[in-house]
Amino acid sequence: MAPMDIGIWLILALACVELIVFSALVGRAREKYGVPAPATSGNPDWERLNRVHQNSLEQMVVFTPLFFLYATFVGKFTALILGVVFLLARIAYAVGYAKAPEKRAAGSAATFLVQIWMAIGVIGSLLWRFSVNP
Image (cartoon, rainbow, N blue to C red; front, side, top):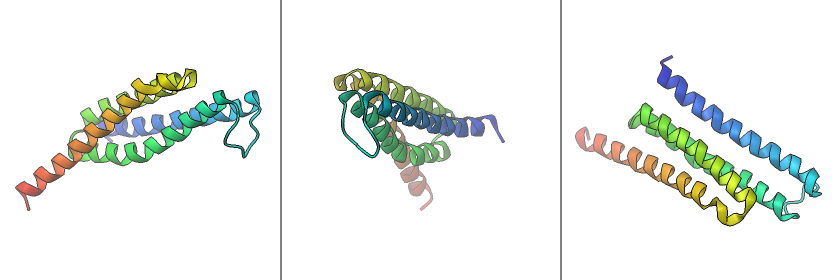
């Protein structure tokens, strides 16, 4: 397997680990803030951590296919860079949101920009390929 391919799989594995960490933080915070399962509301600090986890899970649904499509049809190297930016953006989002909802903006914006970049890249590449070879 080529190093770039390993990098692609590594980014995906790290994104999954990131979700696992966010999930563990939510579980630990349930006890700390007295929010028994299956409650989905309670202490605001717990609710913010839960939203970090839920939102990150939602973003993975968009990121994962776009990431693979981008790596396949646009470029693996840029996909790796965008993957790293996505991972860092989710960390910035998590740290910011855990402190205060208004501090999640930078991480949220960076996540959005990575996904838009990948979506435009994939669609543009596919349209170009179709126009060249209909």
